[in-house]
Amino acid sequence: MKKFEKNDHKIIWGDAIEVLETIEDSSVDLIFADPPYNIGKKFVNLPDCWESDSAYRNWCYSWLEMCTNKLKPAGTMYVMAATQNMPYFDLFLRDKLTILSRIIWYYDSSSVQARKYFGSLYEPILHCVKDENHYTFNADDILVQARTGAVRKLIDYRKPVPKVYNSKKVPGNVWEIPRVRYRMVEYENHPTQKPVALLERIVKASSNEGDLVLDPFCGTFTTSYVAKKLKRKSIGIEINEEYIKIGLRRLQIATEFNGEPLRKEHKTYEPPIDDNQTTLSLFEKKAQWNTSSQKRSKPS
Image (tube, rainbow, N blue to C red; front, side, top):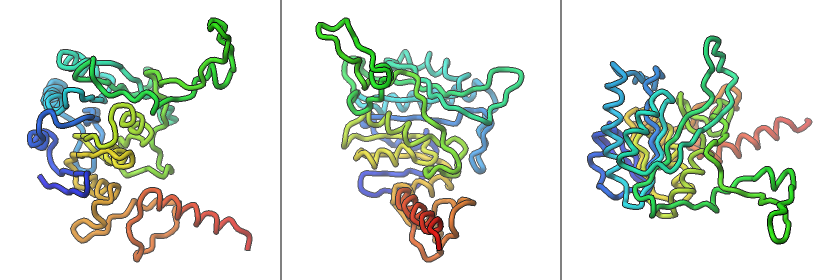
């Protein structure tokens, strides 16, 4: 187990269950847990495969129990899982927490070409709280366009004074948010990266500035990245060294690791890397790329 820390953000390199044992109970405001799904993905040198479904579920029950204990009395936890495993998560958690919402993260995918069954285009998320009468939910911070009011301009004649339907609303439990693609600025080299937009909605809704956000399976550290952006504190746990490097760079905790400069993976369509260039943040790199593109598009 190894820790890296800067300001209010901590990265812990180690096994999730071992690290969770070291975190104080009732100390975390928000947990986002996106564990391996046991569906055969490969995370660098760590295969996403358990010897049996029951072994996988028992492992999940261990860290779910520990995460529940880490939550403050008014804390919130979001949990993702493969569609075939979510019923087991649901049954386990409903005896320990109150499940407020069962969310569907929907995305289109041109790569799904199932021929003998209906291919999956969504991932389920459980939204759970420790106290159903006392928890954080910042509805005004996550409003989205209400198509009836904003687009169709329909009049609600049931009101004492008829008026156009509201143009903003709290999102329902089906979230249409694009998956992270290779050509997207936020892309990192990880098979199951979650989009910034997904985590922004969760962190905005269920935490406040200064709150502590925990992700026990941090991967590309999007949760920690969003927490920092939104002025929360964060703890990110990750077992894979390659992903620790991503976290150190995205959170600007370090510019090198074991003497190796920490740089975002170079994409095939990007300009050559300048070896003398310092590590850039996500938005600095986007600005540089946009500037470079504009220069190339100008007539000589």
